[in-house]
Image (cartoon, rainbow, N blue to C red; front, side):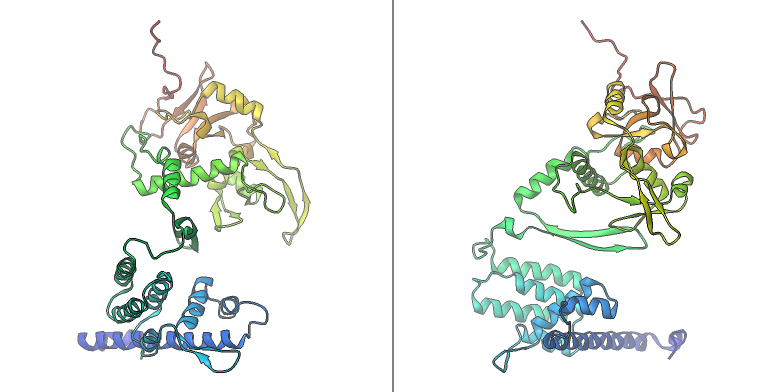
Length: 412
């Protein structure tokens, strides 16, 4: 039946068909798990892990391949070297999977919950948890099942007295796959109490609301501000250079792009991790960076590599800091240590790396400047001033930052 003919089916029959197709999909999943178990048992990976073989041969994500291997090892019997086999860890779940009663998401939740129960848990309670979770996996959608499973885990060890692992040993962080449509990558994990305290102290100040350019309240939701703050904290850590070396170099953000694309603000640049970024984003990163010129051949092979040169050397940066004292954007109170040195005329367009062409801006306003609506000029007294876009002020009257250069006289 072609998809275009679904309109011929009545409402009740349409939903029945949807249920049937869903069960067929779950039976396919069950077959995939059994096949994965056979691949894993035979050791056909030829030196590589089963996960790697599935990922490369089937062109599925590493997370999906790993989940299938984990499911196969949890619900299928394992062959013993001496002959025979061990019984499956989760026999009830195997029966549900084989019957097409649960899908991959529910299976992963049950397995992860059972693996996370303390080793010292009473066997009878462990068996009860296994049975209850399997029953609910056949009744609940994945998100609700995950919430229910967390409650089961907590009731198995409400005060944590059975868990022999120190909380610091359970800290974890997992980076997900990049969404090619949004350009965003999700991550998840757990922190112990000290880790939460350290993270909070590191980002709280940077995540505080700040006035918008038109004087209104910060339009960013709290979760967006926290995300920006976390990236800023990590960026400063890399700038300081305290991180251990990798491959003989301090960790750094590497951006590769064509010079003409950088000049024209068209095209994309490539990161070592995380995929492409726009030329505008690359121009922002290139304002105060180590630039390594390279000559590439027609096949993108490297023919020559130049020497890394920092655009704003420390002497010029110090002079700009003495003049600006902090972010120069009107109304911003961010100190100099939170700021980048920004080329008023970008170096890709011939702008010099000089005291007279550099201003300090915080990361938030640096991004704003590279969106192109605001302009910077130097007044007759050498102080940077900003021309707002016409939609803020049709007259585009210049504005200055008075937070670091308050003209009000101090009482003596």
